[in-house]
Image 1 (cartoon, helix red, strand yellow):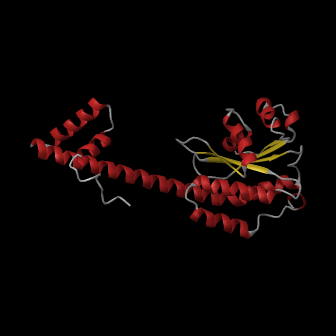
Image 2 (tube, rainbow, N blue to C red):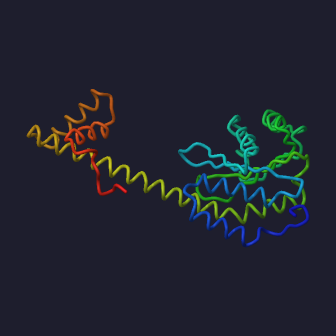
Image 3 (tube, helix red, strand yellow):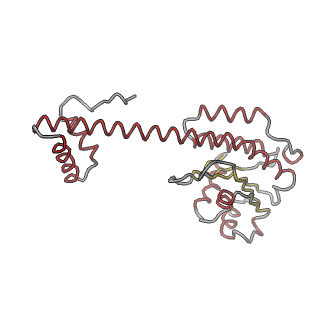
Length: 247
């Protein structure tokens, strides 16, 4: 059990997480499974630990994953305050320990909120990620002074060992999102080019004039240029435009 050992997570856990990186449809799915794995590994029989993970990425809202419904409710508290243990742990890359939320002076409003959920101790540990992406593992217990001594050391070892898998998941998510954005841009550009070609043929005008006609229609209708272009293409009566980027 965690309280009796400082052993690092076994190979099966890290292998499972690395497999999950490859098979998860998105980073949120991976985070939820990582939260469940963390709770299983850091709990004891009759002394459950609840777990959530806060992920902060540039130009994206915070993602809060959880080990289950109870942890999800407590994790929502992270959205309610601008200064929380998870925020401090993530941004300052330090371990934040609230031994007893009933006597916590640093985050009085946060402590009061989690105490209302019968949480007596909180531990926030930063993951070791890359660049501007930050994340923290949050552990909650209904017992005060739950995360001390060997339990604290084990939790720190666990985060250290699982940081690589989270780094990979975030990196893959970035590549996937970049590819999806590129595909959407190419498809939008193709539909616009098709619409410009149709307008050129119908009005016997230049490419620039055809594009200006399309742009004027977009402004008049207060619609996106892509939507107006799609309507022009669809008006041919041959159904929605398909491009070679369609899956």
